Every structure is written in structure tokens, then in C-alpha cells.
Image 1 (cartoon, helix red, strand yellow):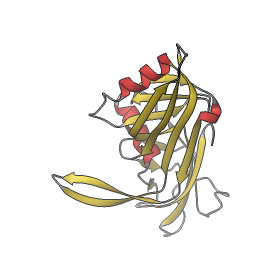
Image 2 (image 1 turned 135 degrees about the vertical axis):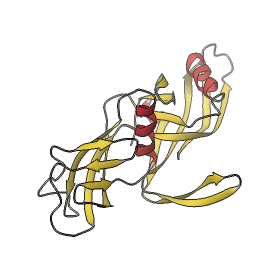
Image 3 (image 1 turned 30 degrees about the vertical axis):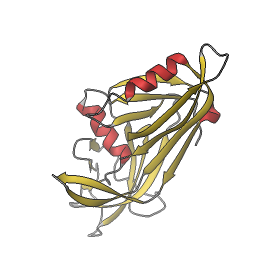
Amino acid sequence: MWISQFKLGRPGYELAFDINPNSVNITAAQVAATKRTISGHLKKWVFRTSFPTITLQSDWFTVQSYNAMQSLLTVTDTMLSFQLRDGDLQTNLEICYQTLPTIVPIRENSAALLSAALVAAGQPSCITINGVYGNPAGTGTNYYTGGSYDDASMIITTGTPLLGNTLNCFVTYSYSGYLVSMEEIGAQFLGGQVDLGKVSGWTLTGV
């Protein structure tokens, strides 16, 4: 996916960027395993269903954009919010496991974590639940109609109880971004240029 406008910063306090669409590349892995600290030096592996790698590489970043990027390097106490600005939502269809006839937790991933962080910061959710279905095609009866989604718990309450005792259901939702960490940034201003620079190796990775 290619974009030209995005927001990046603390969840709810992002900075706006406008760059050439050819400068941004998002690669979203379907499954990834990450290490998370749970207590002290203890680690556990966590599987993610949406694990993006976002890279920026361009010869034409302005000084203002570079300074904004550099200011984000001082953010060390939280992950960053990366959101699309041009209304180009991404969609996801995933298998979930109902715990009660009307309760369906979605899988914890970079998009769901961002939405929870935004709501905690007093901002609107970035996730829109489109439907809960009983088949992997995401068609037929939409059990979500009239239901609700809680960002903090990542739990869907369906408007209609799912039929039968099956534990599997299929959820479709749209989202505008990810909770990410900044891996690195490298910048070099071009000789003879006053306000333009080259930025390479700027990598954001979903958490």
C-alpha cells in the first residue's frame, strides 16, 4: 500500500506529514512473532495477525519534516501512533473465538492496540467493526448489527447471539493505522540545498 499523507507521534498528539507517495512503503505480514517484556527480564512470544513494517526513503524531505521526525526520537516512554490521513482505510477479515453467544474478542494486534491507546488518550477509535459472521467468506447473517465494540478490552458485543455452539466466527473491520515503534532514522542534507534533505533508513515496526 502506498500513501502520501500520514500522522505520527504520541497517540492523540500526532504530527502531520506530507510527502511523495513513492517515499512510503507499508508491508503488512499476516503472522509474526514478537518478544514482549512481562516482568523484569522475563520474555514471552506473542503472535500478531497484523504486523506492519513501514519504511520511508526520499531525497526530498523539507527541513520542517526532518525536524518533526527528529523530535519524535525524544519520545521514549510510549509507542507511536501511525495513521493514514487521506481516508484510505485498510480492512481485515480474521477468525475469532466467541466466549459467550454475544461476546467475541478480536485478536490483539498493532491496529487494535493503537485504537485502545487513542481512546485512552481521549481520541476517537480508529477501528470500525463491519460485521461478525458465521462463515469464513464474511457473508450471510451479520450478527454484529446493533452491537458495540469496546476498545479497552478489544471485545465485540454482537447485536444478535450467534447461532449454535460453534466457537469460531469471522470478524471484518476497518482501521486507519497501527501502534508502532521507531527503529531507526538516518538523514543527510544535500549539498547546495537549503531546505531539502535525503532521509533513508527510517523504519517503523508494528508492536
